Amino acid sequence: MTDGRHARMNVIPAITIDGPAGSGKSTLGERLARALGWLYFDTGVMYRALTLAAIERAVALDDPVALEHLAEALVIDVRPPEVADGRQYTVCADGIDVTWSLRRSDVEQRISHVAAHPEVRRVMRARQRQIGLRGRVVMVGRDIGSVVMPDAALKIYLVASIDERARRRLQERIARGQPAELAAIRDDIARRDELDRHVMQPAHDAVQLSSEGCSPDELVDRVMHLFSHPTSSAVPS
Ligand code: DC
Image 1 (cartoon, protein in one colour):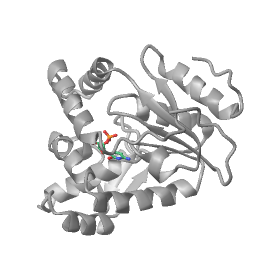
Image 2: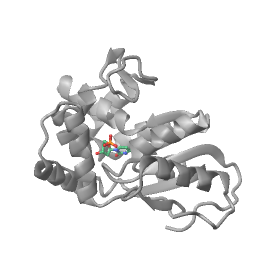
Image 3: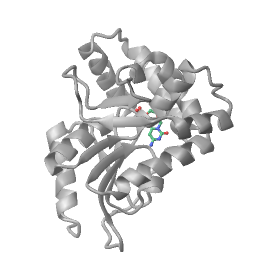
Image 4: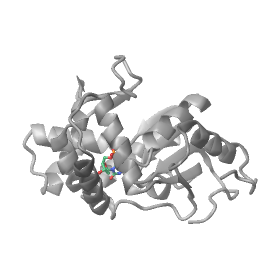
């Protein structure tokens, strides 16, 4: 990975944030979008909504054609939060609010298998790109800078150690009143890292940042600096 701030033709006013589970992408993405007055779009919810729909409609998770049809037919709507219960957004699938169901453990267990099908990714990426091309969006995922929005103005690849990521997930679950155990969460993240490895495609020109030892505010400041000084090499670290 090198510095992703070269002058390019047809640059889209968008910021992409990719990185592994628990690296802090959603916190950073939401804050950045708020600071810029842009749309925040977490692409993981699309794969989560599809996985939930497949489970509930008994679509075989190893049938790429059936999953592709479901992906094409499922209406996934992501809107500003309509309920003050800690959510970052409201997600509706075919008109039903599934915001919290997307975090169910059976969805977490199966999602990597669903997201691995190239047929599914083709449908999802095309929809994500449509949203990205409108501009003024902070888009978060695994392959956004490399595949979906390679023409985004700034591409970030966010990392943190597995122990730090597990601690954060633990805090999130405790805050939501969910059962939580650090060792199990760490194992789950390690498993997902392995499964996600083939979809994790850091853009060659992404700027790599670590969220470890850095407060959310500091991280936002660093990214805002990168965004507003595209030719500067004096990036605070
Ligand atoms: O970011 P997340 O934990 O909500 O992502 C859920 C799953 O979706 C994760 O296993 C990786 C997958 N995903 C993906 O393959 N591509 C994306 N752009 C976003 C998420």
